[in-house]
Length: 244
Ligand code: UDP
Image (cartoon, rainbow, N blue to C red; front, side):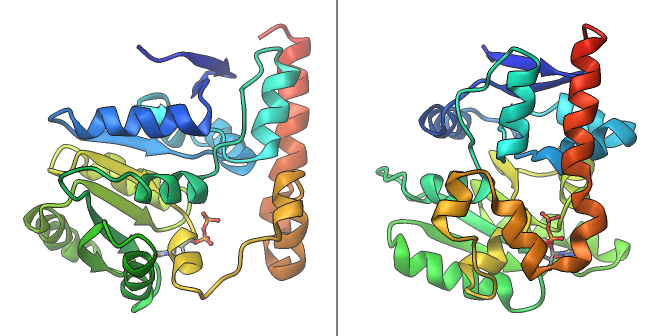
């Protein structure tokens, strides 16, 4: 049974990091595909504009709040989420799971060579994981069938999809019925970080909900998209005032 909070029509799971990891362990024991997304304020705002993305989030098996913006919005809506569960930390915690049978991960997405470098680094950091395959995130529509076949024949348990938002969520949704993995997770720029190509914001900024400031300095061209953070706050305030 999911314990979710309704955030303007999107059911975000009321889970701590530990509980999210437990849920994923449960998914691994079930014989079907599960979808996991990690919305931040930008994705939540985008979902309000894009009904297809909203529908995908509504149908997810696990939605965790990736970012201080979503936590703050949950407080504005008086349905506090327990803590931020960022996608990258969630994936690291999943890598940390040690069980008798090795969990097999498929790294899908990012520029050519990045998934392989990320997989190599993660195999060194978490020697108990198995990497079943890698594939870059640049492909034509004709190649999609063979990508699904590559993932399925690799025997992966968990598929990490790094195609950026909302491409990764839409790709997972479009292919989930053909995939034989147990869990698909949209991981955004995480493979770039695992590969050592991109640095995470310093810990004190991440802890204090100021990651956006670091991103703004590093990637100023994201400015327009980042306006979705204050937009989402205003949207949430107005939803609260309208009693939604
Ligand atoms: N990416 C990809 N295919 C695409 C577009 C993007 O593999 O067609 C990758 C990109 O190389 C990067 C990742 O998606 O590694 C995440 O991109 P972005 O930083 O835009 O992530 P977001 O902020 O949307 O999570």
